[in-house]
Every structure is written in C-alpha cells, then in structure tokens.
Length: 142
Image (cartoon, rainbow, N blue to C red; front, side, top):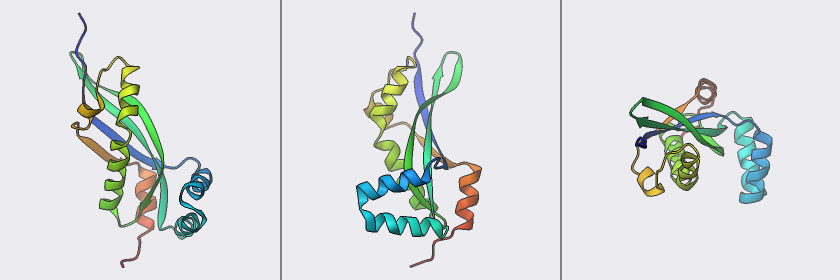
C-alpha cells in the first residue's frame, strides 16, 4: 500500500546570490543596459542586494514531516527597508515556478499538481547574511 504524501508548506529561504556579476550580466541582457547600470549602482551603494531563493517543500506522511529541496530561483533584487515589497517579489517568483516545483516533487515520489501547490502556504525567510545586508542598506524614501 502506498502512503499518501502531502505538501503542507513551501519554504523559500533568501540567501546572497552566489554569482552576482553573472546575475547582473543576465539582467543586462533581459532588461537592457540602462536598467542594469541602475541595478549595479544600487548594489554598489548597498541599497540593493541580489539574492536567490532556496525552495523546500514540507511533506507530511504517516512517518511525520520531512523537508524536500525542490529548487532554487536566482536573480532576485531585495532592498533594505522594503521588507513587504521584497516578500511580494519572492512570492511572485515562487508562484511562477509551481510547475517546476511539482516536477521536483515527483522525483521524490510526491504527486502534487501546480494548481494544488498554489493553495499551499508559502513561508518567505531571509538567511542571516541577507538580513544583515538589508539592515545596512536602507533605501531612501521617495
């Protein structure tokens, strides 16, 4: 008999981008040189922090709850003093990868359709390095 495994939460943990120069180069290709130059200046001034999200699914079954690594999203820009905007940005990115998350879960024997994953709570947290970096770089108010 197969045990039912259910995704009860998706955790997205923000960590410093491992390759910020490559990420900025990717931004330049997608958004254009002017916008990439603005991101570079904001980063150099300490206002913007490039992060990636490590995605973990909490999966419950008869044996308890386990955490399964289901992906990584790189290339996000977080701003100091903009916690709500940073969280919204992260949630949008997680929502845009539900197909990939479902595929990763399937490799671990967990069947979850993207539509069902859209209903699962998502917890966004920053690791210690991101928290410190964001605390140092407060974006000026408009």
